[in-house]
Image 1 (spheres, one colour):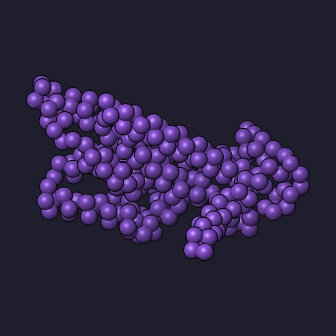
Image 2: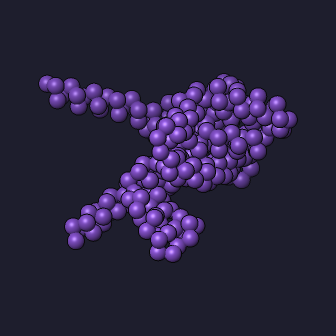
Length: 269
């Protein structure tokens, strides 16, 4: 009975998590304007989503979101990887202090981060727009990259880097040819996490986006919901995003499993 109730509880949780996504995916294949009203199978919403000029504001919001996410994730990955290497080289209380400081932004509520960055930009007289949103996203994404890269550094044999230096490699060559290949999986995970967080963020974005007409996907959905309903094309868009993320996770897990088996085979030899 314990096993039965445990499995039932697990399936109930999975149903609560994925049923709404499944419903959105199903009703993305109908022309109905209202979610829950099935008027027959159709791909019109998908066509309308990608039709030129049909939903210019939504397409513009998607483009802005992707550009901001890519830039933020790229810079965050670079800064976070460098910071992780620096933290890993420290010892004692200095390392503990920096780890704690790195964890604070992740534990801090997003709304506090958004207000803090808003006041910072205002105090420095920085006009809000693309620049402030990207800077804000880099700020809260970087600690997550550090958290992804640090475990890879801790698993790495520290003598490999030192051996490269002893064999005549410059610090930059040792970093490029020894250290970066070792932490590459962590950097990729950090990039994906930062990219996802940037796309998903609303609280920080709404405080740093300004009033110049810039919109991201999260702010567009918020403004659309305040009008009394959601644009039907958001259903196929949500389905595409979920399918893309799911496919990406499957590919990453398959590659990770292959690498694990390859390492086991090399160790066995």
